[in-house]
Image: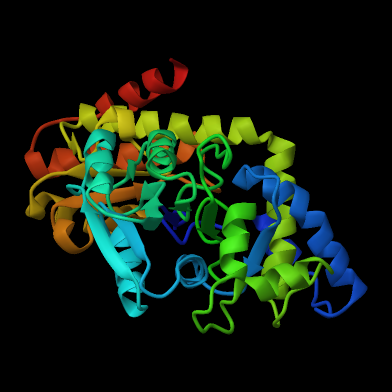
Length: 380
């Protein structure tokens, strides 16, 4: 049987070297071995998140990192703005509404990136906004927001307003520089471009955000970021960590460093370009404009019957799993993940399968068209 190929936007495939590292055996989480492990990880982890500040590791899903940012950085009744352009912006909205904060939503049409001029006008209509939350990549639509322009707009509104970015489906697949993009807090998770199983999340805060967290009286316990920063001074964690995942993280970071992180980002961009060229050659419409297309996930449109046919045939006949649309986009798009332990050859495999499937469905021969377009995009 042909090997299975997981092309969802998370979880993603795990490199054999990482699986092997996680299987080497447990170490005590209150031992010098673990302290050394944490110390080894920090410099490489900072490089991937684009920061000089310590990066906290939580043993929980990416959603916990989103909630950690919310519960530590916003006080009771403070005004916050959340950019909602898809299912995960909506998750930030739902997290915010759990707490006693004043929530304002900047709605963006699903599939579009935030318009910075409209965002500035929206911000200027609200008094004393303390924090702005957005996705880097909105996983449900495959759009990348213009982080630098948005961050600049936030600081133009008020230098003390925090800019908080969900990088769950972007960190490891595209370059970040927190300072250059005015990001005060960046969060991400393990199960996407970082090539690990679900179960770890990461939070990086600059001094402004850390000071805000230290002066926040909203009740929290496990998600109290101050506990994690205190423990990190001793290269430890305040609670029992997912030791084997952190061992795997060390291997992931070694692999990224060995490959050259810029080369990793280039590979992700090439996979995006290959897919978009190949899908267009099959007369499939992109959801997102080229300018804001994610290097980690691609979404394309068609009618519901054809999309259902494609998704089922990919899995049943070609052992390839991709993802459907969520919420408002359910039945309207399919999403192909191309992040982490994935390579250009994987894009050729899925496009070859799509050529056959679309040819069958439309009774028009597309053989070779997507592959030729993808190869041209790769070598350009």
